[in-house]
Amino acid sequence: MKERSTLEKELFNDIKKISGKIREYSRSQKELWKKVPYLALEADGRGGYSSEIANCYQRGYKKVSDFVYVDLENGELIDYEGKIVDDKWVAELSPNLNDLDAREIISELEKDIKKEDQDFAGYESGDEDYRSCKTNEEWRTKVRELFGISEDYTRNKKLLEIQRKKFDYLSSTDYVIEKLVKETINENPSMKKHVEFKRVEPIFQKDFKK
Image 1 (cartoon, rainbow, N blue to C red):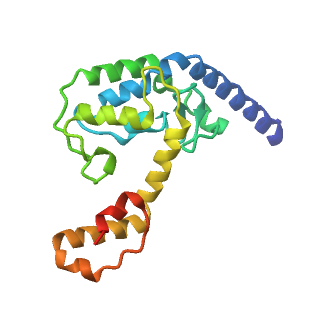
Image 2 (cartoon, rainbow, N blue to C red):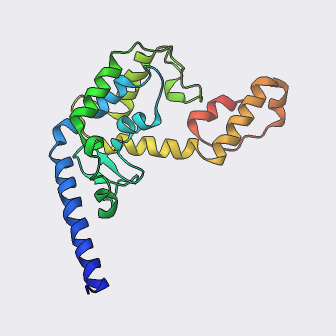
Image 3 (cartoon, rainbow, N blue to C red):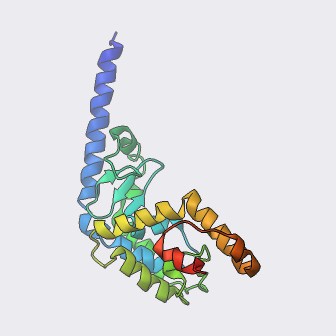
């Protein structure tokens, strides 16, 4: 009878071998993966907006399973935070490698790009970067500028860090409160004299000058 420890070791080695082949397959498509962020941006907004597609051009990550993403700069398999993902999650991709077929993914994006652009929803969240945009094409141009997107993707770490800090700020309690105060003043101008605004965030401070 085979010992449990022996079986566990064999299975561990099998998983490592399988995941290694899958990682190699993904890396071998590096030049194709680098085309995905640009195409994803072109496809977004045609029939709807997708956070999964947005992740491709905003962070350079393509989701292929609940736990595995492709780094579109180099084809490495990573987790959501950009760290090398555990072999066990990679090995689980083996029954269906369609999700790792960069050529197929590009083909689907190119089909979406041919669809008619929908009316620009305007990112009505109030994001300062997109307020001036009137059309999807204006918005895409702005996104290319903000994230450094080109047809041959290379991650611009400086631009991504700026966007990450901005996202953290826009997700903060301070910003939510600030936005509520601003909306209240806009609806009731007489309330302005009762509001003492102490923050020193330059991008918003100008809106509260007395």
